[in-house]
Length: 343
Image 1 (cartoon, rainbow, N blue to C red):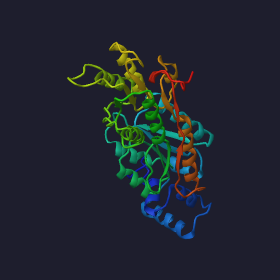
Image 2 (cartoon, rainbow, N blue to C red):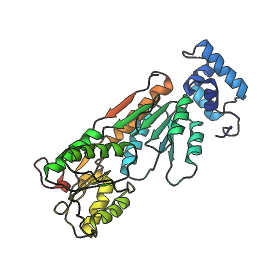
Image 3 (cartoon, rainbow, N blue to C red):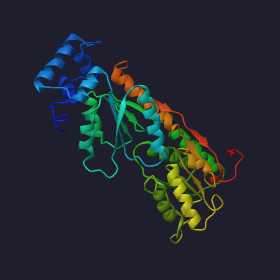
Image 4 (cartoon, rainbow, N blue to C red):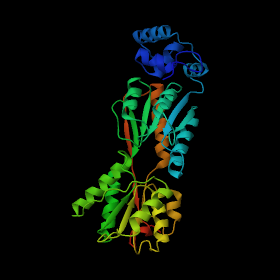
């Protein structure tokens, strides 16, 4: 990490790391206000002296509580899912008077160094999914920088906000079995995060009904990625291989891509193959056939993360919290006729 902030020496982040406290505590100690123990204040001032810390304009704004910035790291910013989450986050951040520095890691080199640099320029961080390696997450936690993880398994001493995945995936798989389907395919990377939880729920139900769960076919979580996966899963079959009766997709964009591939191959959805998604983006309800999916509160996910980070920065809450938002199975026509279909 660079040892400078706008060319003015050490950063508030480095002072906090040296003193073993959060940036919020450094801020209160420098303002000489708020509940900071005498011993803690002394550690902060000693770190300031040792590092020869001269606050930059950003540092001053943090110390005075003006125009404080949050950092948020996404794997990508394309597509409606990320847009909805970010919109929810920014709405609350604006209400709280905080600016947001956004980083997308897609196609970027030296991501870990870029994230370290961002940490040094903000008073708190939000990290989406597994865009940052576990070792760096641990480093940020140890630095006592306020941290919220979005759509990622909880980590000790960090807040986590996510949507429920496993139970809704079980409900989805159970519903498909109710149609009589016995052969399945899964489309979407096993990401060791929320998608992995979905596959866990699906596998549990299929295994419980004597069906060997298939390995998910890796693909980008985009319409293009879904289209490529659909061509593979629904195209020419090898000798003895059966076309799946149902394709369960990691998200709605993948599902829409699989639908396009099915149409191009001359297959009827759901007559020849059922297709399901996840998220319930706007296109899911307007697609033809309308997409069976799992609705998650995307905008609320971002909003809750913004409020959680604000609580940590202000010090109104010091104990990490893990919040799981409910999701809901939405039955439409892409999985076949059914009395529960949403009109």
